[in-house]
Length: 148
Image 1: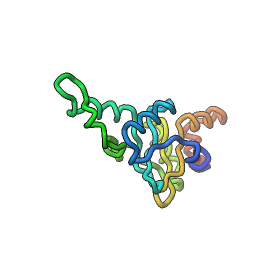
Image 2: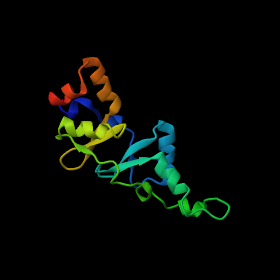
Image 3: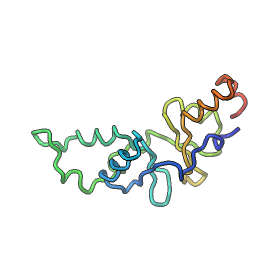
């Protein structure tokens, strides 16, 4: 079995564009109910993941005035790409091994998946991996040894 077995395809994943405004990003996160989501550029290249924490840390940054308010001018003209750390959520390739996926899924609720051209093709969720494990009642080491 390979990574594609666990894949939630891109069309079923809520994503943001790196050039979405902070307001658009927050609105999308709020309406979706997710705390983090993948970010792509307009050419569908995977950029990284942005989280609610990224927004919060930005909002309590040095842009606050002496009363703790954030001037609206510091938010206008800011984009999702301006607040995210693109190195903190590396993607796996659809051709990577199940072992690589398992190492990443232990650290994150989902793992972004890209094709050979770094185009975003979907995510693998920890939930899907655990559901497979539960349904098949095998041990994690058996799953990895079998080359999921």
